[in-house]
Length: 470
Image (cartoon, rainbow, N blue to C red; front, side):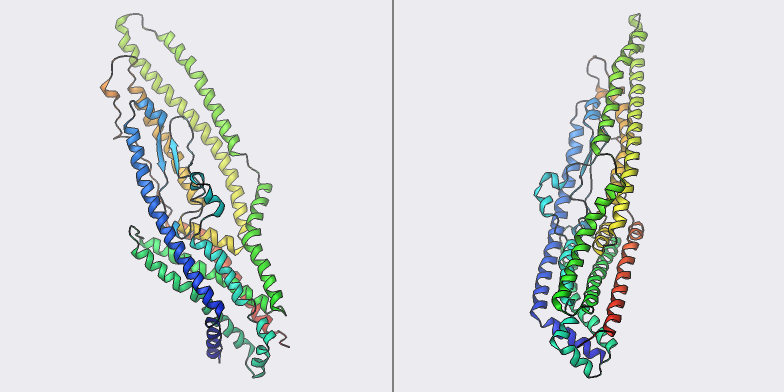
């Protein structure tokens, strides 16, 4: 009997115009989003390679180490292949940071800065389509699953044939969910094939695991809205009422809760503005630079050579003094900036954690955060990359200061030792987050989805057992 109910539910659904429209639209959107994401990734790869090569050529073309230290080196963020599925914050945050002896590095040049129109429409990735479009289809499939049968009189007719209520609701759940997954599973399989044959795309073993976990999260997310639709449908007496209630809940989950959580977190945990922190860094930099000239002049007056024979010794002492002074000044600037940044990051991270944890009561937010973590395009990966650049700055500035001071010629003829050589320049390195760390951060999101599915299904099951079919 259960098998017959499931078969009836699937046949009625897949032969309806609603299913045909849903399948065609989902297939088009999913394949388009994956193809666009892969194309963008390939373009980002080429842009990244070009930027790295251009930075190296710019450094090699500098006439002196002084200009190298002032110009600095540029660190570009490498693209993530799974950003084709979940773009995360990659398009909103910067892609390149300048590391020089003076200023604290920050990521700039986001896609939104390059082309502001992107900020208007946002990214059309697979996560967005599942979060918005497919969740609406889940509501469309279930808002009248129970109450619609009651209005048509078929529910009363089936129960009059002594069909057990528990088997009827189980059949509707299984059959309806299979019907809902068909417009998702088939395009996802085609998307996997597209990823495998797309030129220049190579996923490692861990990447495939990440991708499959993201697909699992998509299924759980749709299950939440599917079971929610059944619950509301079994608690109302009119299809129109059921649809309006579900639409209100959908808007609350997808739009209101995420935005409201950010506003509340900003009120509860206020942080200083970025401009205020930058102003403090600039003020300290000017203070150091303002006293530098006087200190150097005082040292020169105290150590001025009295005979021509002492000139060469004086130049070596001056070079050593300037190198030590520059290293000390740079260390003071880095220490001051690090202290300001550490305090700012602690306050900002506290605010971000509060906003994230508050918004996680929404399955839409849980989907967003989990897929970003698995795709390595989330806030945590961004902060890790920025932290690696700031940790690299003292290493690079120490090298640049040493090179700059050791090649000073004090107005003498061109010194061949002053030729810029980058063979020993320290290189920035960044290790992407391992799968275990990403997965650990997504456990609360998976847990929330499973919990909501169980609660909504249990509510729908109990409600249907007591449902008045008259």
